Each structure stands twice: as C-alpha cells, then as structure tokens.
Length: 190
Length: 391
Image 1 (cartoon, chains in turn yellow, blue):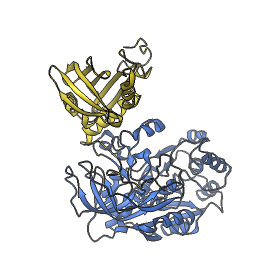
Image 2 (image 1 turned 120 degrees about the horizontal axis):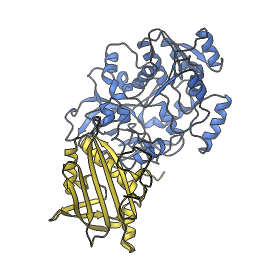
Image 3 (image 1 turned 180 degrees about the vertical axis):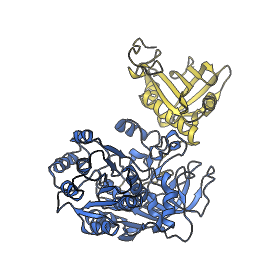
Image 4 (image 1 turned 135 degrees about the vertical axis):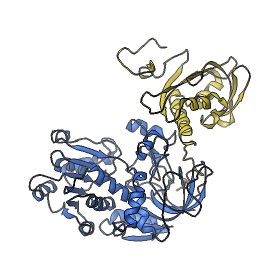
C-alpha cells in the first residue's frame, strides 16, 4: 500500500487509486486499480477468471495460456511485428469466490503482478469487481516491446480488459466494430 | 455491397465495401429493404460530431429481412422482417435491466469507450453509423448490416404492412414519443415544440396522443409548419414573431407547461447569442454546440414547467440560463432514446391506425442517389422533409 492513505474520503478499496493512479501499490513502475459492477454472481466470475486458459477470450494481448503444475501458468503475449513475450505466472493468493492474486516468476520477460477481487454489492446491483495491474517493463529492446504492448498505460489496459471481461460475462460476447467483418467501411483512398 | 460512406464535411458517396459478417454469437445480418436519412445525420454531414473516420458507413434508421443469424440467437429466424433500433443495447447489463437501453454499458467496444468516458464521465452506448464515439459501428444506409445483440433489439413486423409505415420505429417515432413522455404532459397541457423536422412532427403527434390539450409548433420553413398544422398543432414562424412573447400572449401570460427542443446543436437564426455560438462552433475551440433553442425553451416555459430535449448535443456550451432554470423551478429531461422500451406499444399504435407515420416523407430515392438526398435534405429543408432510401 502506498504511504499516502486517504484520510477524508469514504471511497472503498482503501483506494489510493483516487490519489495517485500511477503508483498505487507494489514495487513496480506502473500500476493501477480499476473497478466495474458486473451483473453476474461472484462465484461465476471467480470461476471463469480462475481458469487462466480463459484469459485470451477477453484479454486482447494474451494469445495463449498453458497451465503448468503448482499453480503456475505460461502466458504468451502477442507483441507488434510478430514478437512474443513469455511470462510464467504463479498464483500467490486464491480465496474461492473472492480473490485471486498472481505474480510473474523469475525469468519472465516482464515483471508483472496483479490481483482481482469479487464482492457482492450490498444493494443487489451485482458483483463489484476490482482489478489491480502492476508491472515493470524490463530494460533493453524487449522492454520497449512490452511497453508498447501494454500501451504504456496500465490504466488503459486495466479499463479495457475489465470492460471486455464484463461484456463477456454479461452478454456472452465481446463487443466489436472491427473492420471489415464486424463493421465494413470504404477504403480510405478518397 | 453498396453503402453510403462519409469522407469529410459535405462529402458522402455510395461506394462498394465488403459485406458484413456474423462475428459474435448473438449477431444477425439484415438485408436492408428501407432506410432513411435522419436530421441527426446532417450533424455528421456538417462535420459537427467528432470521432468520424474517412470511409464510415452512415445510417441508423433501417429495416429489412433477416439474412443470417448467429448460433446464440434463438429469437430471430432467417426470413423474419424486422425494424432495427438505432441504439445498440445488450439487454443484460444494469442499465438494460432498468429500462435504460440507451445507456447500455456493453455495446460500445472497449477501445472505443475511452473517448466518451473522458468526454462525458462514463462511456455511452453504441449507435449504428454515428461516429467512433458511439462505437464505430457501420450504419444501415447500405444493402446489408450486421446487428449485434439481435435477439434483444429488433422487432418483428407482420407481413402485409408496408415498410414505410413501420420504418420510423427505428428512431424518430420512439424519439418523438419519448420527447413527449419526457415533457411530463398532464391532460389539457400546452406543449411548445421547437423544430418541425421529423422528430418535431412525431413529438407533435405523440404529445396529442398523450393528452396534450394544445401543441404550439415553432419553425421557419412554411412546408414544415404546414405539416405541423395538419397534425393538429398551432404554429409560430420565428421569422415573423418573437417566440417567447408570442407564447406568452397565446397562453395569456402563464406560458407553456412543457417545451420540447427538437432542434439540437445546430440551431438556425440570427439572435446575438446564436451568432457568437456559430463563431465558436466554427473555431471548434471555444465551444461545440449552438444551444440557442435550449436557452429559449428555458426562458419560455412556465414556472415549474418541464423542458424535454430530444435534439442532439455533443459537447459543451456556455451562457446556460441557470438563473431562469433554478428560480422558475424547472425540470429538464433528455437523452438518447430508449427505443427498445417503446417498440411493441408503438407498433400497436401503427397497426391500429392511431397514427400516420408516412405524411412527413417527401422523397423516395434509390440508395445509389443517397448523396443527392443528403445535399437536398441539408440545403432545401422546406421541401425535403424526410428522405427514404431503397437499397
């Protein structure tokens, strides 16, 4: 937790997200917290996320996930120009129906840490989902690639991936207007 | 397929583009049999809405026949005739659950949703053919359209009803209806409506069906005022009278109980505030909207009255008459239309012959002549009151 604790706000999440969005927690250079209300029971949401092989269905840059032993999984992240970033993720906390935390193990191309938490909304509006994403791009050429993949902004990544997760969980699909199939358009040569 | 595409200010043309495909399980592909140019399409034509991209297909009023359905769609069958709401809504989120489909949380794709989250505080729903702020979806002024969440939005139309009688369920009929609902009309109320374009005309029809005692319609095009009169409204030509003074006189000093702004961001007229706003709008720096009508409705409505705004606004404006708004104790209601909520009820009104939905159509053109339709709908608003396109 950051040292700048909120003292005069009742925002939940002990959320320094409202104070310093770029350095909310952990040891990494870039991190963020994002919240979304999802209209599904938290057990369903937990179960879908807990199976990391589901990540590619809503996380745009995650190409493939292979489950290894001991709570570890191998993530292949698509980079520009065909580059691939490999990451071995270890589950560091797993509270069924409530919270999953993970961290990249040594030797991964990127030092990454995250958690997702699920809580029933007190007023029946669904499940409050909060996600934390934090990482340090490594040094050198691969670092530049990673930063580009992560769109330099963990905030952008967190809000887009949480939106897609919500879409998939609520509607059964990820909304898209990608040309040409989902939304045809004229070529731009006019 | 052929489609009407946008290439910049006052530059639209019919091009050959790829056919849309089923990409999500709840999608359907509709073969379009009728579509229309909306007054709000002129905001795109005039390049007043940001987030347009060269080559975008326009059009959000359309209907047709189901050509293909995705595997998760258990509602529609190939061959069904449907009218498609211009608002794209998932039917599953908090907002759709609470009868606010135009506030759908899921229909604006994750990458596109950033823009309105920044501009408006929260991202807004997807719309067909209405810029990348509202999803970047291809529109329906085309031979085919991909309709997301097609098991929730489209309404089936029985055989034997001509396209033109039901086409406007896609937007302007429910939009006029919701504008009247938002005006909170009590039996015998006087309702003043600015703008006798298609939405204004449907607001007149709807206000009378909802129990208004008297509707006063305001415009400056003689043909449009004539249509308003034919629909049961008294009319004011704002080139001939000062609107607020005339309304005060006609209501013996009380004022209209409700006012409806069916004009929106590109108000005409030469009042001082509107000229300053036009300069600001042209620079795109100091302001984006010309809210002359909105100001006038707030000034003209009676104390404790209601202002309803179906007219489209997109950005920011100043000189908001906050004093009149507060001191008179007004209610302001607005928003993109919750089309899905109204369709069964409004289709029934059409089938029962309780409303004429075709009297405003002035021109019918093949899709290939859509660019000509835009030009005339923009430049000759007196004669060109509504354009229907046939692909």
